[in-house]
Image (cartoon, rainbow, N blue to C red; front, side, top):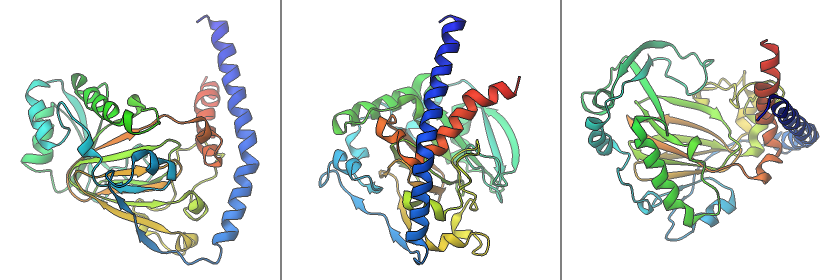
Length: 327
């Protein structure tokens, strides 16, 4: 594409995104006002997430309902050429010798994925191959004074991760009408205590727990006003200002949190969590574990949700504003 055509294309994309932001802004403002009014006198509570089997309810029905559930038999439907669990990584390790960087963080401030403003304190950076990494995480044991969280993308481990994601996409394609987003999916390996703080995404997701267990907390889009999210017009990620473990939030600092309904579950090996778009979620590893965040492509209807205002501003700033201001 020529430079002129590229500039025209970028201008068209910027105009379209700016138009969407302009259209969503009054809708977002109205929804925020209504949500504040509806929850103003409500006393929040904690409820367990429903657990379902595909034998009783199809994946299409689960996704169409738009509410998070733990699916106890989804992983059973997937035929892996190399199952991405501890045993699978041990089998893969001798044939994967490319070294990669591994960051370890202080135990008192676990590594929080993608963000650096929750007090995470880097301990050390090491280079190791898969055999060394797997041994450290699951065989000899992890250092008790630090924690590690590694995200493998589909470009990692000489194509092995891409094969795992392809196996999932091929198995789920007949079960749903959503389009898998292979490139946005990956494999997470983390030690006990690692936390992904409260945030929301614009896409439909599944969290497949392959080994170990995690604690999951979720809040509906209607409770977004109670969760200390920053202004959607700030070019920041979709992360709450609550503490990384939201249950530790100070009531005086975050008074509206007590009005929110918290949905909780323990996600064990072999189970999967369905995460609808714009549902805020927070995840903590209860032990060393392997899980797969599998994502489906954003649909047109997802873009016109007022919850998309924040990522829309983020994208607009990142692609069209930040490059200009950095010149």
